Amino acid sequence: MIHPTPPGTRDILPEEMRELRALEAALRAAFDQHGYGEVATPTIEYADVLRRGDERYANAAYRFFDERGDLLAMRSDMTIPVARLVATRMQDDDPPFRLSYIAHAYRAVNPQRGQMREFTQAGVELIGAPAPEGTAEVIEVLSAALDAAGLNRAVVGLGDADLYSQLLAEFGVDGEARNRILDRLATHDLVGLELAVDEVQGLAAEARSTLLALPGMRGGPEVLDRATELGGEAVGRASQRLRATYDALSARGVANRVRLDLGLLRDLGYYTGAILEVYDPALGHILGGGGRYDSLLGRFGRELPAAGFSLYLERLHVAQTEEERQSSKEAS
Amino acid sequence: MPRVVEATRARQEGPLKLALPRGALWGETLDALDRIGVDTAALRSDSRALVFETSGLTLVTLRPSDVPTYVEAGAADLGITGKDVLLEQRDRIVYEVLDLRYGACRMVLAGREGDTALDEDERRLGGMRIATKYPRITERHFEETGRRAEVIEVKGSVELAPLSGLADGIVDLVATGRTLAENGLEAREEIATSTARLIANRVSHKLRAEEVDDLVERLRPKGLK
Image (cartoon, rainbow over all chains, first blue to last red; front, side):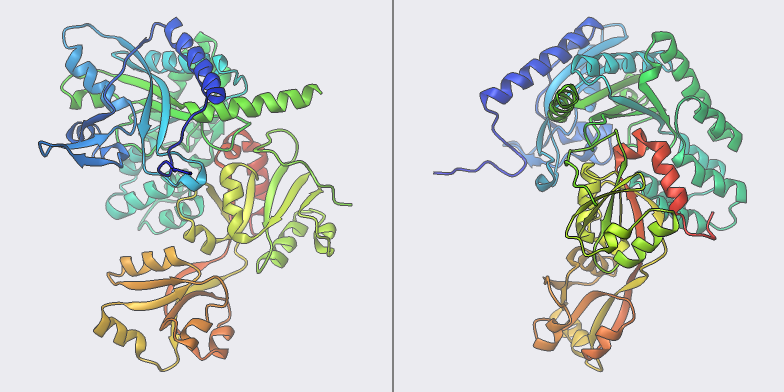
């Protein structure tokens, strides 16, 4: 008899489980070495808690009432639960807090595309350490985690979440036009971006070319020089923030792992300043992401700067397998 | 001779892999490649091969609607397909990097010439019966205009649906309007316009930035920045 599991969920058999556990152990050791203590939080939270962190419930797809009529939600990531934990359970402790987790999270996805409803996130949160050093530390841990997973070729894209909103404010673009431009950037639609920018009434020619040039600017630190040449306050400030982070990364010896990317935009509302995405040449999908969320803890009543990242464990495993396959092919 | 290469999930070494759409965009896509000095002789031959190595690129040929699938997964670094395909597969995460300007056509809602069935459906039945190969574009269009449609998905000649009574209207792609006219149909509303687009995989766009940008610049239609 065949008894299926719901789409986007699956069983794990011993052979795969052994590999996943080995990968988890390697990541855990890397987190531990950097002083990040592991925490666990409930799979279900009050929906209000997620909403406090992100107006759209951080994309939590599964919400339901419990026996008392309270609205609960399956967590969609660990960042908001950890923010709640720090504000609630660590009230009397002094920051900074270095916390790590390896835990399931739940999202609505299209199972046909290899995305899962239930997946595992492995990551860290550094709470109470401001930019740029806090950001650089998180990227250093991320880099160590990627090495521990055997993904020596993996690259971290580093961008700035505030760049475009500040830029549009500087250019006086607001309302519908602003939302349209941010949407095109978030959906990677560079053709639509040009149309949306051209629809803005009375936009100066330099402002237009800045908006169209920035999303394509990605690479080494020379990208920041090119961006600064475009001029404008918002670009100048974002470039300064990124340069400070990059310098801190250089001092830690992990700058070579990082590619600056002024086109980066993440879809969660709580990001401020630095944002990250992780790529490996063996996989066409991103392996994870993160960034700073300096205002998130304040929403839980404890104003603390914070940054973190999370990696998709199952995708790391796929990338690991692909890298092994490719290197054994090269060897033979 | 075209050489078949081994497929991998994504390849950061070796030539960029470009997915090309067989079908309506095929001819103009090959012309665009000719203009940037890519040798398309093997693709123009009646070879059954699906993969070609030429002029520093790996070219893979597929159905236009499969192009975003391959590019999203990283099985191709870049791809060319119609905006209609991208609109229908809106949730695919790919970079849309360039409007190639050829293959222009319109997505329209069409009904039988002089027939009032569509309006009547709306008035008396609360919604139109629409056959289409583009169910998601259709549903979105009706939603955005505050109306309701019963969307019937078909795979083949959609013009047949209103002629045989499966539906009262269709949503389809129209280049010249000849097929509509020949089947006694007329366009009632324009939903979107479409041209060929160059798309890029999210990881390739980052990790092979220079090569991707170089190809984008070479393919950029003349007269555009």
